Image (cartoon, rainbow, N blue to C red):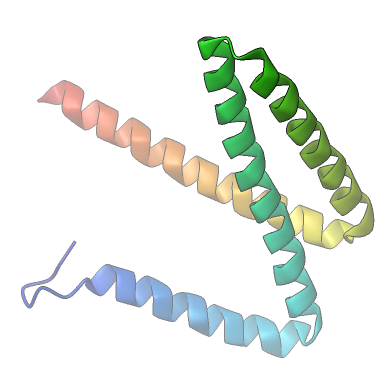
Length: 123
């Protein structure tokens, strides 16, 4: 949403707030903050690749291309093994922090999606 000067004021406030939160967290957590962020990033990248692979797997199954299905099954298995490795090697606090972030993102998406659906039904 833009203000009267066509500036995305809410986006700027959110980004600025996130930066300030990073500074405060860095003050209290010190070097541990980098470990939390790097560990969280590893989960995020892995989740993205897993979702892409599963979507490709579903598409290939619908197209009945068995060679690709076997290849993608191996890729998904490898990603799941990587997930197990990351889960074992990352500290529990990083895993909990990432799970909390994913939960907040999911609930905010769900809440906004439901809110938009209710608004369109009233129209």
